[in-house]
Image (cartoon, rainbow, N blue to C red; front, side):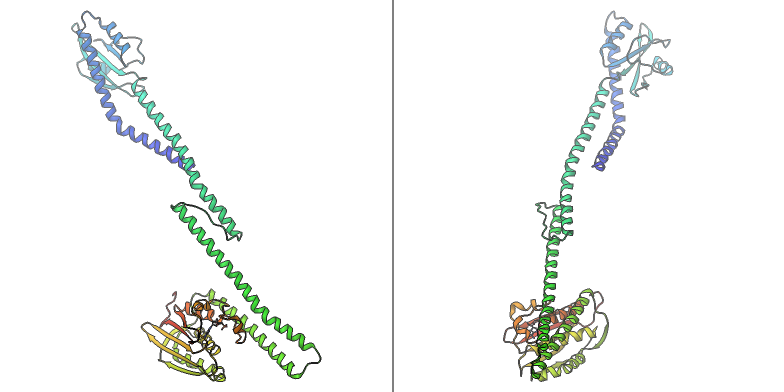
Length: 444
Ligand code: ADP
């Protein structure tokens, strides 16, 4: 507000200085012209009035016009008295006018123009000096200008006061909303119909609040999922431990209970490993150890490493691998193929078939892992990449998964600048297609 008023005052000062500079000369000239005209008229009237006496005539003329006048005789003596304001040209100027020239000077204290006109009366030279009475027209003009400027200042300040409320009010709303957001209340929304910058700021704020609310919900879901995934094995461990404490228990049951406890502990340990991996991957924005290696060899090694699992289910694995070298993080990609192949084995019934293909297409490599297992319903094909998402929770208990595998896969593919999609129909098997750039550009 103060800055705005300061700007108005500054502009007014500059405006008045500028107008004075621009118009002073013109004003001066037109004033001089009108003074000369009036002087001549007074002289003419005097000379054409028969029997008029010089001093009384001039005294009268001075009283009735808006000009103050003074006349000087050939000795340089002022003949009129009692004039307000006094007209006091310099003696030198009076001499020049008496000698017959038109004199131009300035009236001392107000800086207004003054002119002197020579004339003769009864064969003797006289000088008539004319100035504008200082309390007349010019003062009125000045006053009018000053009043106008004052009105501009007052009105401007009032309007700025009103405008600043208009600007500050939405900022106060925004500040309050931000405070509420900082206190964790993500349901805050600012209602505004404005389309200007403030309106856009409000819209961005609302968007941010919605996104934060979503993030908060995701965080809560995540925590709920983690505790559920921890709780389930812990319940069964504690249940079977209690059962083991009973005395009359057959050797066969004891072994079964212990096996379950062992499996559930392993599941817990796997869960914590995967959680840690996922959170590390979410912090990293690029692969850690990038180097050049043969992707087909890596795939072959992983198929061999998982042989006990697919052999046990009598699954046939078919490979169609072109020899391709990539620049990527070998350990991270190894995790990708292990998870994809592990899933294919898990979700393919005995005697099924898995096909792994590797081909380079332009600047990318495409790896597909296809099985002829239970498939994934179309509406689940995006969600399976979210943490803890399982297509059929009941079904999965038997195959020991926590729903983190594909999230880890997607995270790794993302930070390598690639993409992954699932193609499948229920009953028609699933195909996971991974496209990776041949070389990883840092910052991708
Ligand atoms: P999980 O540890 O449960 O396997 P994932 O994140 O690896 O977790 O997979 C998420 C879900 O996606 C699985 O629970 C399963 O329902 C579905 N899924 C993954 N791969 C396949 C596949 N090859 N065939 C059928 N369903 C699959």
